[in-house]
Image (cartoon, rainbow, N blue to C red; front, side):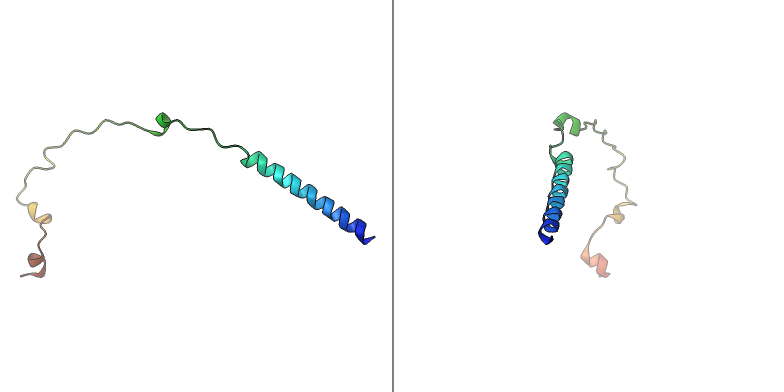
Length: 74
């Protein structure tokens, strides 16, 4: 009687494994569609340079000044 129970459990396990394998195959069995390079790239026009951004301003020049002696107060 134990052998029939073991066989039925094994058969049920194989059916579960087969259905799990079928579910995996249905979900992951094929690669996704290939994406074209043109669909991944977006082209934008460059913004023109702003001359006021890089203009010399004597009051703001000290904001970007970097000197170790000045930092140490020497």
